[in-house]
Image 1 (cartoon, chains in turn green, brown):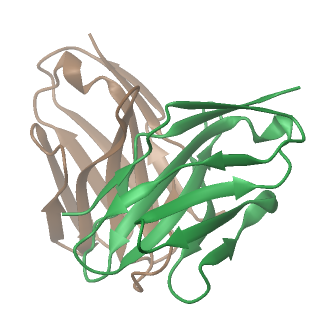
Image 2 (spheres, rainbow over the protein chains, first blue to last red):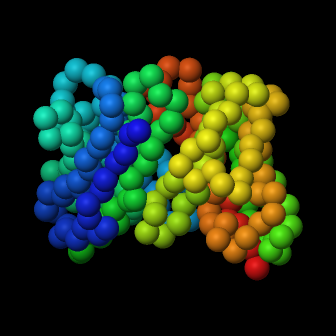
Length: 113
Length: 113
């Protein structure tokens, strides 16, 4: 069965600094990987996904993520953080051939002015 | 934004009563999911559907049942609500191809007293 781990409950970054939100996964086959963001009292919004090909994936709002098969990781990154990036971020995985999409516990990102 | 509507948006119910939450989509997507979101647990999959009348259990299905009689509607029923089912419930949809991302509804906040 697939699973996702987000090892940090909270990440604090100063505005303008680069940010990284970590995600590791476990699947029996090949993964489809996703990042979502949730703002207060809202549903989840899709940021980016890895399907195949280039290990560096670019998404919305300047975010990118790097797929590392050997480390089974899919870390979310942004070169320069904004205060408006403060939100709850979720990593998700779908094993190819499986219908389920499994989410991690989420990481709360605080960008400090 | 994907056409997903959850109803009701808020509900307070008493322990032991049945509750049905509705998810309605206008996108004709094949897959529909029900998740619950709880602090410290992130998003956990309750049940999902891969077609009309085709459903399966997720990670935390005990105490819940689902039905999908039409492509556009996916119902989640709590047969006899308990306080442990107090949560925010999210519906999500995704298209036929497994590499497509899921789109989320705005959530239903359920309180069982």
